[in-house]
Image (cartoon, rainbow, N blue to C red; front, top):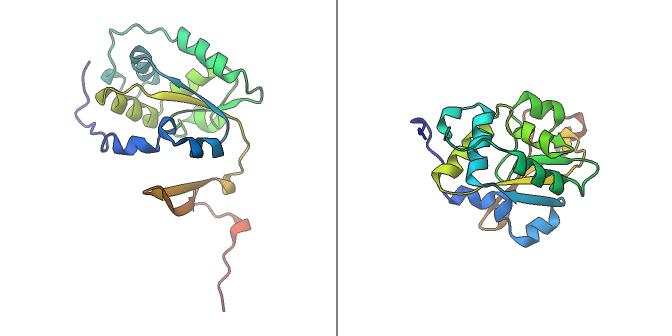
Length: 183
């Protein structure tokens, strides 16, 4: 396997504390219903190669068989007949055309794998970081929910305390949130 010279992961494993697989049970219980699947190392390399972004960083000698993963994803998705939002524990492939067109929604394992292998720089980075850290990342399928863009927020925590909230699409003007200045 060749390593990319420009690749320097953020501090590890500190930033992984925010990944879904590392959430405390209390936070998981407040979130959408979800099922996590931990990846095998061969699946990490296969997803990375198929994704196409920096594919040379993933071992080409590892067998490229994602059929077992597809079957595990099918089983995980089955309890959610309205579909699921697909993501790694770290991030989703929102940076791709496929991710934007589908909003990350899938109804079966094949669609889930397609979302994770459609040229996402975010997914490629996180898979490479996991390999470098000898960490087997997770895929999560989360119960689908239609969330209007103006109602999607990011919450920021420090030492398990909420320190800030911002809109996910912070550069977009939403008329419903007109700011009124006090006189």
